[in-house]
Length: 304
Image 1 (cartoon, rainbow, N blue to C red):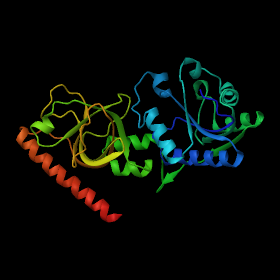
Image 2 (image 1 turned 135 degrees about the vertical axis):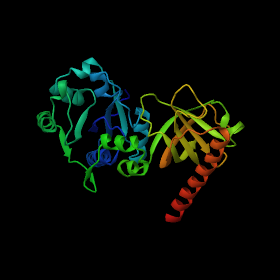
Image 3 (image 1 turned 90 degrees about the vertical axis):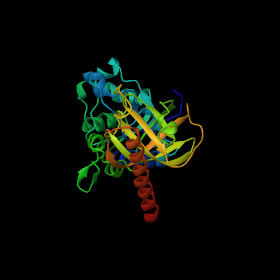
Image 4 (image 1 turned 45 degrees about the vertical axis):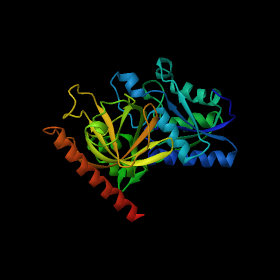
């Protein structure tokens, strides 16, 4: 880990870097600026819940996406992805706070009101503040952030996306939900037989994919963004292997993309995934989907 001096550190897993997380990061940046500290957030390299229970937890953001979001919102914010292993899982809560002070040179801590840590989640926000004070470390505990009476949480946002409510999820995230990955070679049905250039994305297997269906989306490669229609699902009309795909039909050309790093932002669900009688019916539906997406983008531009 690169030496960066004394830090003000935000604590949490930060899956999604949603509006609630942003309140912690904002306070951390403020404390760092006022005290001459380096701002940082401490997350983990894997889901603690998944490590403890052995049950996969679909994530809103990979570590890379968490870093991208945090640094985009708060330039200069260091992202520390600590390893969550057996030693971390069984660490007494008191030792965790000492580790923050000694290993990460924490001089100010910021945590949410429901922050739990240490072996069997025995550490609480109140205990964190108490132990920090004993070590001469400042500590802020941030209350829950609500949006129209609903508490902002990663769990709520996951539920929204699992229902295909991309626009509502974006309100709680503070930005559209996105998946990043490498562009892969597909079956070339889009460009060769369906008449629409396509981008097939390989998402991180640990990341959540939204409800199967067709979305108005924005595809970004190397800083170049294009409007698109994105299908999430198993492509029942053309595939039989049952594998989940994230396939975007670009509404504007963008050049050769295979092997490039790509980001897909989900803006609005247009319809659920459907099975068609054949490729001709599918081609006709893609044209209708493209028209619906163009109408969405046109309406969005008129609102700006």
